[in-house]
Amino acid sequence: MPDALPPAASAAPAQAALFARYRDAAPAGDGPWNDVLASLLAHRSVRAYRPDPLPEGTLERLVAAAQSAASSSNLQTWSVVAVEDAGHKARLAAVARGQRHIEQAPLFLVWVADHARLRGIGAITRSPTEGLDYLETFLVALIDAALAAQNAVVAAESLGLGTVYIGALRNHPEAVAAELGLPPGAMGVFGLCVGYADPDGASDVKPRLPQSVVVHREQYRSTVTPEMVGTYDAAMMAFQQEQRMEPVGWTRTAMSRVRGAASLHGRERMRETLIALGFPLR
Ligand SMILES: Cc1cc2nc3c(=O)[nH]c(=O)nc-3n(C[C@H](O)[C@H](O)[C@H](O)COP(=O)(O)O)c2cc1C
Picture: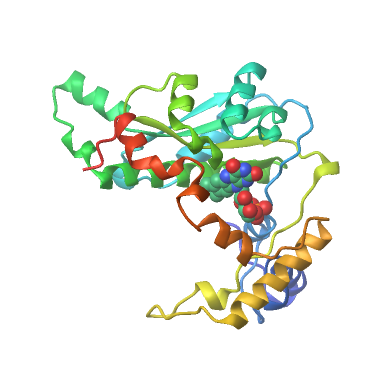
């Protein structure tokens, strides 16, 4: 484990990183700091890639990092499909509203909530696998896949690579399953572009909600106030202006994403879709 620098020596880089992440709501005061924290706080999604290939063995190292994540009961109910073929990436990009970065990135990883492996092991060992029929066990696979993918993201960023998750694959999970040849009981829950960021399309660290809003001590209490909304909208507007984006803040976009079934772009049918893909969700 890397040692945390003493607060005095670490204050300047830590405060700069915290300011980038929270703007005026950056937590004050000293605290531990090291290279891992610096890398985590510097995260930003990358949506423009250079065509350069990844160094030999990168996929294997990213997967080793992913498999090093904790896993519920060590069931490891996830898989990943590595897509590098241009035609294949183009068809997956079409599923995800034509997001161009999917085709640009040299590597596109589709993270799979995978019950098919345990079902198959049940078949060859003649063991019942009815526990996989439950919503809880789908959540286990989803959580495992997300933890594994995030480890791969952290690893990729530590190697100087950029990434962006692609949840839009869930607009058409059946099409993704057909494209990737997924068996029943396997679903592509999100994709991940991996590659070298094109500096011309570089984005910056995006501010997050103030810690005072997301952290509760001992008991949850409501933190929703007009002041909170205003503070974060102001931070996001400043970020959007710097990025030459429309300064719409956060609240308007967030509310539009949860307004109703139509805001879910087909994902409002997810229960039926999951059942069709072989997750009974009892
Ligand atoms: C599960 C998940 C799905 C996402 N899906 C998409 C997507 O389809 N397209 C996209 O451009 N960004 C996608 N993102 C990236 C988010 O928009 C991004 O993480 C968020 O705006 C915060 O920005 P940052 O990652 O640069 O800090 C997704 C992120 C997550 C965690």
